[in-house]
Amino acid sequence: MRTTPDPTEQLRAALSRPGHGSSDFDLNPETVLPEGRKLRPAGVLVPISVATGKPRLILTKRSSALKHHPGQIAFPGGKQDEGDADVTAAALREAQEEIGLPPNLPEILGHLPTHETVTSFTVTPVVAILRTPFQPIPEPGEVDEVFSVPLEHVLNAANYIVESRRWRGHKRYYYAVPFGPYYIWGATARMLRGLAARVSE
Image (cartoon, rainbow, N blue to C red; front, top):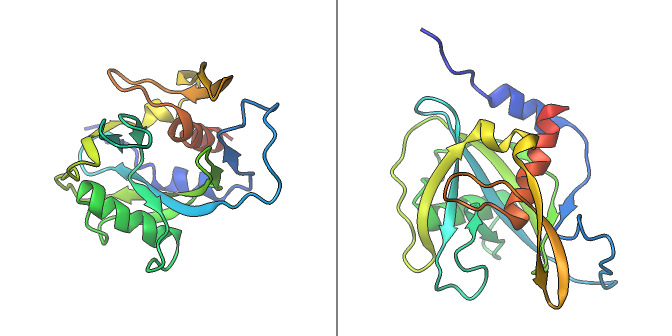
């Protein structure tokens, strides 16, 4: 019987490699960012389930009723609050609130470099393995859906495309890595593209 390789060591090795952070402006080098801008810290969880069969990445579809980024695909996570010890604690707290993930379930493997967003956050992606199955509980009014995609899909750089749309009167380019009915783009796709690059090194 063939077993699916556990990605834990592959991911640990990828996360240990040196590298620079990313931003929503990576594909738009003409953008001039203001000096002295203040960025708020945030943490997002990159939860990879190995509990059943092939490894799968868990993502959320934000509620279409939200003021910011309605209907977009995102990692569970959010801004670091005063009560959070660090961005990892923020990511775990938000994941529990948004998808009902028990904070003791994720096995933290490490962090990707920070990502700066157009909404003035500096986001730290916290990569974690889930070895135990759990039943997601979407937070009403915040999360419309919790779903998963094969990890191999987002780790394959060939699956990424560059697209554009107008934002604040300018054409802005961004990464996207669609999967079935899910259009994964923007900051989420950029952070995943960074992980894919590290894994392939």
